[in-house]
Amino acid sequence: MKDWFTVEKIDEDTYAISEYQHWEETHCYLLCGTKRALLIDTGLGVANIKEVVDKLTTLPIFVVTTHVHWDHIGGHQYFENIGVHILEKDWISEKFPISLQQVKRNLTCRECQFPEEFDLEKYQLFQGDVQSTFSDGEIFNLGERTVQVVHTSGHSPGHCCFYEAKRGYLYSGDLIYSGCLDIFYPTTDPKQFWQSVKKVQSLHLKHILPGHHSFSVSTDLADRIEGACRKLDKEKKWKQGSGIFDFGDFKIHL
Image (cartoon, rainbow, N blue to C red; front, side, top):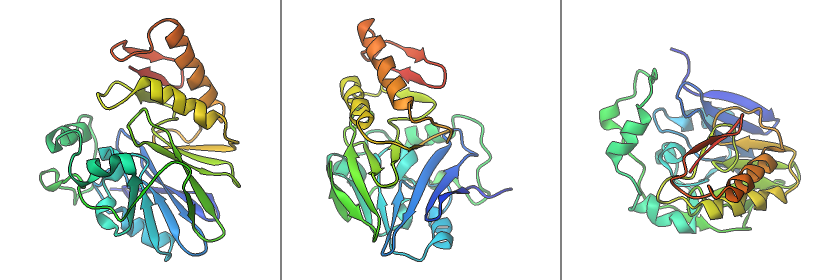
């Protein structure tokens, strides 16, 4: 079968590493500076993402996590230097909010041709100590390249986007993407989600790089998602349990 990961070059030192064969269509991002590289998320964990990263750079790797959900931390097991937002340190070390059985059900709930070496019985959710925690506004210096933490809670308590001001890149995780934006979990918060969308609206954006699905994300998507939040709030539907609302290239599940 073809390779599980698809590598796409965004610019000369930035890569997307994607899992298009799974319905989640996750995207991880490798950002190379002159001294070290930043890997944003590690995907599902059904194949070894480090083998792909090692072919792209020999720089030391620092893994940062947009949020501690199973489809973003699966490959953390292959790396030694990992950071998460302080609010989700407990989630990744010992208190993940859903069971391994539920994660496996989520992983396999739609038809997918997994890699031949993948064994569902041996699949484990990453749980372990992290080497660092970060918070809003923190700057990662990669060597002639800096990336800022933007805390954007709502989808999860410690959800973060990562922003490169010089390039106008926003790595938006599960805050902004073309697909169904999930805000119905017990650990999600619609009010915080809306405020987070407003927060990234204030940034100078040239390119939104999402955590899932299509790369064809226009920079006005944040504006349109904020408008949808406002519309649902006006209709008194901006609360959990209201249902799924379709806005064309994105949906909101409350």
